[in-house]
Length: 393
Image (cartoon, rainbow, N blue to C red; front, side, top):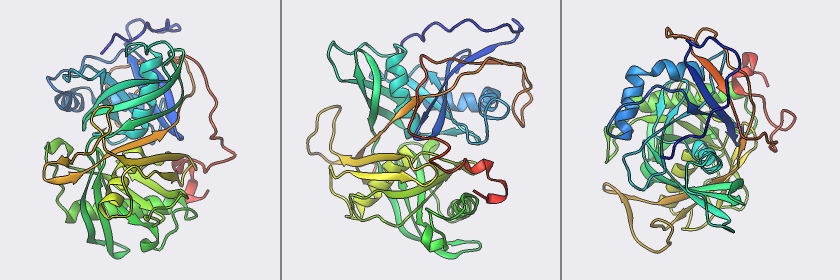
C-alpha cells in the first residue's frame, strides 16, 4: 500500500493528545469514515489476523470514530492497513456500531475513489477513463474500477466481488411475533438472511422504519439461533451479518427492486447495500431468476438511492466462461455499481470517547480533498432511522 498523503496541520489542540485524521464520504447516503492517519499500528501477518488484533487491542479507536459525539449509531468506518496479498493496492478493516465486518460494498465504492484521489494506487495512463484499485477486504480481494478523467475520480465506481453463493433457500424459521417464516441465506462477502417484508405483514416501501428494523432484527436473531452458518474458507467469515427485507420482486425486471438492510446492532443501511446486492444477485442466479450479465437495479427504501448489479464471468479484467466455486458451492462473481461522494468537514476535538468507552483522549480531524453535492437531500429521502422518535417519519 502506498504511503498516505500528508495530513493538513491540526488546529490548536493539546500536543499530548494523539490525533486521528479522517476523510468522510457517503455512497448512496450510507456514510463512510476513512482513517487517513493517526491510528496505532494494527499488528498481524494476515488481514484477518489484523482484524482480530484490532478487535482485541484497539477497539477504543472504533468506538471513538463510530459513536457520539463524533459519529452516531449508524456510522460506518474503514481503517487502511497493509495487505499480505501481492496484487492488493491496500487492505481495509471495516468498522460499525457493533464491531467489524468481512465485507462492505458501499465502502469499496467509496474507497475506490479515495485511493485514486489520494495517490494510493499508480496514476492511470494519460487518457484513461477508468482506474483499477485492488482492495483486500477481510473476505478476500475485491477489484474496484473507478471512472476517472485527468487522473481524478468523478463518476460511478463498480467492483467485482469475491465468489458469492446461496447457502440455504426456503429455510423455515420460527420468528417470535411472526410465526413460521421462509427465508433464504446467501453470501456476498458477508452472510445475509433475505425475506420478503410481505411475509412479515409489512411493506418495505411504506412501513415505518422502526417497524422494519424490529422485524429484521427478529429474523436475524431467529436465524442465528436455528441455523448454523459455515464458510468453506474461514471461520472468521462464518457469521450472519444481518437481514435484508425485500419487496419480493426477485424475478428479473427492468424496474428497480427495493430492499432495506438491518445489520450489526440494528444499524440501518441508507444505501441498497453493496454486499447485500452481491448476495441477492447470487441468490437470484441460483434460483434461475437471473441470467449471467443481466443487470438489475436495487433501490434503498431508506433513501431511494440505487445500485446496479449483475452476475459476471471474470478472471481479473478478462471475461470468459469458467466455473466459479467457493468450497463445494457453485458461486458467481458479481459486479456492483454505485456513486460515492465526499461529504463534510469538522475541526478536531478532545471530548470524552463515545459511549461504552474507557480509553485515552484522542483528537479527531476531518479532512477532505474537495466538497461535493449529491442527489440525496433531506427533501427527497426519509430521515435516518435513528432520528425517528417513536418510529415516526
